[in-house]
Amino acid sequence: MFGFVKNALPRAATMHCSGCSLCLLVCPVWRQTRDISLTPHGRAKAIQHGDSVDSASVESCTLCMACDPVCPEKIIWSE
Image (cartoon, rainbow, N blue to C red):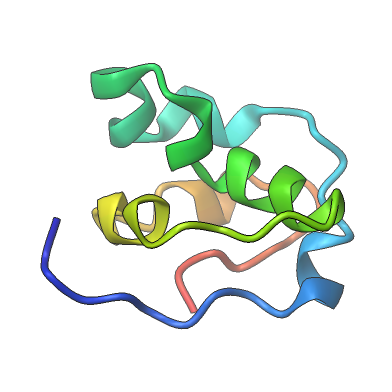
C-alpha cells in the first residue's frame, strides 16, 4: 500500500498467537478485503506453519495499530 515492507515480527513473537482472531474485528484491511492472509492473524498462522509471509501482506498493513491493544497475547504487531 505504501510501497515499503516493514520488518516481519520474529518467529518467537508470532508463536504466541493463539488464533483468537480478535485482531480481525478491528483490522481495516480485513474489513475491506476479507482476505485473512493480509491480516496479523494470517501472518502469524503462516509463520507458525513454516510458510513465508509475502510482501503484499506486509505492505497492505495500514499501520493503524488497532490490533495491538486487542491482542490477549500482547503481541505488538506495529513494531
